[in-house]
Every structure is written in C-alpha cells, then in structure tokens.
Image (cartoon, rainbow, N blue to C red; front, side, top):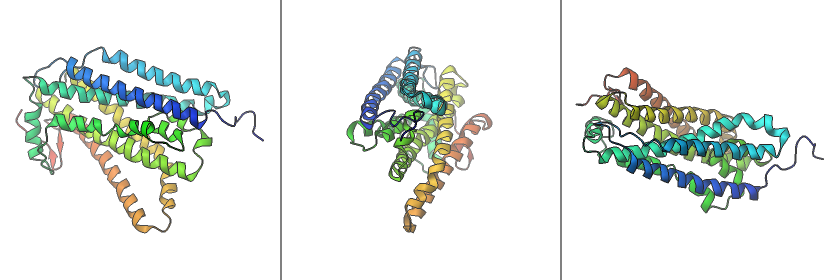
Amino acid sequence: RVSPEMPEEVMSNQEASRLSCMWSFGLILMQFVLLTGSAHGASCAGAGLAQAPLWVWPLIAGCCLFAFGTELAVLTSAPSWQFKFSYTIPSTVMNIFDVCTDALAAGVMLASYKCEDCRLEAAWKQVAAKSALRVNIPLWSIALFAWLATLPQFLIPLFTDSHNSFVDLDLLGFETIASLPEKTSDANSTQERFMFKFFLRLLAENAFQIHVQITIAGLSIALTGWTPAVDIMLISIYTTFVVLLFKFCQLWPDFWLVFESFKSDMPAKVVFLNVLLAAFVVVAYALAKILALFVCPQHLLNYNGCAEFDV
C-alpha cells in the first residue's frame, strides 16, 4: 500500500521522455542562437576579446526562468516532495546558465577572430609553442570544438530510446526531476546515470570547456587588461567551475556502487580508477589556472610555471 504522503508516481517515463525531448531541442536551439548571435553581433574591443551584445542576457535569463518554472511545475503536482527536492532547483538553474554562457563564450571567441586588431591568435601561438603538447591549432577552432563537445548530451534524448528518460533529464541538467526516487533506485539506472554524467557533463561539457575559457581570458587580460568582455568570460569560468565541483559531489555517492558493479573485473576497475584520477587532476589544474589569472604576470599558466609571451 502506498502512503498518501508518498505518491506512487509523480511523472511517468513517457511524460519524462516528452519533456526531455522538448528541452533537448530547446537548449540546442538556444545555444545555436547565442553562439551565432554573439559571433555576428559582438563588437570588437581592440587586441583582446570582443564584447558580447547586450540582448543575450535577457535571453539567457528567460531560459533559466523557464527551467525553474518547469521543475517547479513538476513539484507542484507532488506537494509532499516539494520541500524534499526543491533545494536542487538552484543547481538546475545554474546548469542551464552554464550551458548558455558556454555557447556565448564560444561565439565571442569566433567574433574576436574576425576583428582586425585582435592579437589573441598571435599570443596563443607563442604559448602553444612552449606548452607540453605544442599544438598548432587555431584558438578559435579549439573554442568551437569545446562547444561542439557539449552537444552529445543534448542529442542523446532526441535520438535514443532510453528505458529511463529521467537519466536523459539528468543529462540536460534537470536534477530535481531526475532525482525522483522511483526512477533512480535500481543499479542499472545508477550506473547509466553515473557514466553519462561523468563523461558527458563533467568531462566533455565542463572540464574541457573551462580550460579553453581560462586560456582565452588569460590571453585577453595580458593584451588589453580587465575589460568588460573579460568579466563576461570570467562569469562563465566561475559558473563552470562551481558546477564542476557540484557534479563531483553529486557523483561521489554513486562512485563505489559503480566501482563494485565491475565485481571481479580487475582491469575494468583499474581503468575506472585511472579515469577518475585523471578527472581530479583536470579539476585541480583548472583551479591552478584560475589562480594564475591573478598571480602570474601575464595571467596564464603553462605546464612548467607561468606562461611568458610577447604581448
């Protein structure tokens, strides 16, 4: 018998599937508008980053409010869960804000590349030549690729027939709805959620993105100082880093469950631990690069210390 205080079902898997498809399409469209709009509408600001157009902020705010309203509407249908899960709504809003500002940052970098006075690419070539990898890839293409790496998590709900659409909603950042207990109690859902969230949201969306954005911000600060365009990039960086830490904290309880699911498969356990260790290193290095923005003379960190280049 189900207690009246604990309803049997707040949202069916079919309803969750429709909701995830709607938001998948909506977020892809929103990111495309922000990226192309800022790429064509940003104003040049000298040697550093271009300035994003002001109209993007009401658009981002509207998207965040709509996400807030979506989860609130689901909770309203289950009053007994409102106070139990409402604390996760701010993290959902932050997830949506992070997704939007990542697309905005990529668009601003593309706009900067077209500016005649911009010297970001020239400074990047000097830094890349002294790095451990010595990559010879244009910075604008790295920024674009970093944004493209976030798309799989939004495409999965549209093109896959998941048995658990609440996992799809978790991929999209709707953690309140995705945390409904009836849909997350089995081991398979826990493992699926962990793998998707770790590789797509934590690594592909946040870890790669934050390193690219810090590099762009550091180069721009060295070239033109602390401009409003840099402040916007820093907002995206800080948001991404906070979301990154939240995701680590959220995934930690499921870590041992997933680890034990490999049972006697020792090679799989070793690979899993190494991947987790690499993720910790990536996050720690991102924190070091953020501190370098304020500590290093030219605001950028390389593998052997503060980066040096001719501005």
